[in-house]
Length: 355
Image (cartoon, one colour):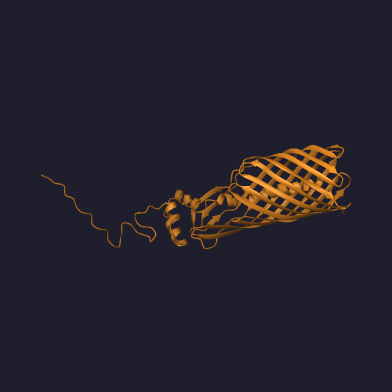
């Protein structure tokens, strides 16, 4: 005859508890990225607990600590591409009028990239000269500052350009280069952090078209191709934050074409112009960046900026008034619409002095 006997499980040895407990991590709590981000932890404590997570969960932790990193980190590249387009439009406007001499401009813009908005302001000066009857060449230089609540970016740029005219036909070519510094800020329940980086921007713009004259009115088609290369250094966040992030260096490019119509009307001492075009972006529209938690290589993830699609409507127009035979002033508008997750509006004021 046999019988089953039950034996009570002995209590755990006090030196070897079944559930090693952290003051913020009771034994009956399952560690997850959401659970860790909800704890009030210091830097060393957060990293200690994060190391106990499997790699996939570490990646989720990075994403939960910086949910908006993709948008904010994409702004330096996006604003660089926008600057190349705006500077190309400024130069084209001057060359359309066959202007030579000294030119100074001040401009400001407001843009939206996905849920983030930012503003830019800048100045540009340049000089252009004729070379024979069919060629104009020149250079320009300037400064642009871009900012929002989480980013401050400053860049200095320089460029050379030239134009060839024959009858109603014209061809413009411009090359730009810029160096930039930027600072990003991030706040969370675990503190605030700041990251500082540098970068450079290279751009090329080619444009050709034809103008027909009908008395004081001129009109004609044009096509352009703009190329931009934006490269930003990596940086490591610093500040009073429990989990600083490491952002790797990144290089992004833009290849965009425009096809449209230019129109101008001369009225006494003033010239009115209105241009409309369709823009198509050939490169990937979502800017990628690689981010990880410092000290956790397995937490590395790729975050993306807003998907801005590939097509948009560009509209620009303005007025130029001759104050004398040598001096003229102008004001113009440049806008980009109908592009998913992106919109830009810019105003430009200029003064030209003939040499």
